[in-house]
Length: 462
Image 1: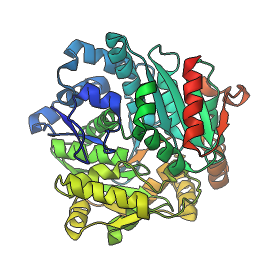
Image 2: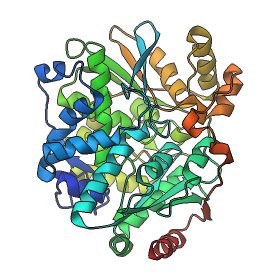
Image 3: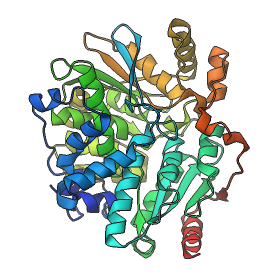
């Protein structure tokens, strides 16, 4: 299997090469040239297996010959060894035919741990074998950064620099990024919004002199390995609810589009997923696109669900590639228009394809808070605001299939919003109880590519 760019002008790579590269040199995102399928009997055989075994069986066909079976099993086992629930991603019922998929039992209390822990172990194994070291640069709207730092801190093969929008994430999210003492991790508070952070990361990858000079690697959701790891929990949850003998629907709180795109990959592999519902907050570019075909970037509006405060959803490019039937020229044209003009209009054929792939809905600030309060009254379940966006949209889409809403973060990461909704301040788990007392290590940086690149050069030279 080869990995090709959505924009069609970069050479094909192996899984290992594509994962280390992150972003293609033509600015596109890597996708597999074929998507391997799973037979009905293979999916049925996943029932009762451990999360790690399902992960091995689902991901192994995408990996190629870079790892032995035993070597890949070891990477998977190490990735999930310190999750705090034996099921890794348990289901909880919150209403008739409506379930939460709890993705917050990892070390940093968010769904990002599932992919980032896998990527960390994968990078370490590959780089140790090669005798190489890389510089990882990532942008975060809240949860990716803490997951990346936790996954890579102290590892010998990488320096990690995380850009986050100054003053635009919760205090818990910020502290999870800034309190670590390991010399190979660096927190950079950029004066701008998440889209600015993400744009500077892309700029660094498109500055080939800098990229090659510091051996740049990416762990944002643009990295195919991140997408692949997230495919797994669609299988574990659907099988637990009766797949492949019944279809299951999913609603996904969506910012950068990686998590829900992973669900689409699971469906292409043969998992009987009925509806894949995009749930957006007030930064609703994806919902607006599906409604009218106009993918227009507006100003990012800060919200109580900050990890979704995004107007440039990078992984949407992957969905566009498939909606355009693999026409990389059309993808490149639209992405250039998004950069130059702030938006583009999806062709009618591609829009119809996207509507077959996904449904969508949105929740504003008041609806988000009301949903947190309503679920707490009805079930005692405390939702984080991102999960509440998903639950609100899911409740509008319930049908004959079981509906699974992805619970993307622990409510204790957003204590102020939760407390205002339900009158209860959720406590951090014991392993993070001292988070507020730890000293922070953070560097403020302007929204200036040259300044950020020079800082990175200086830090890795020490």
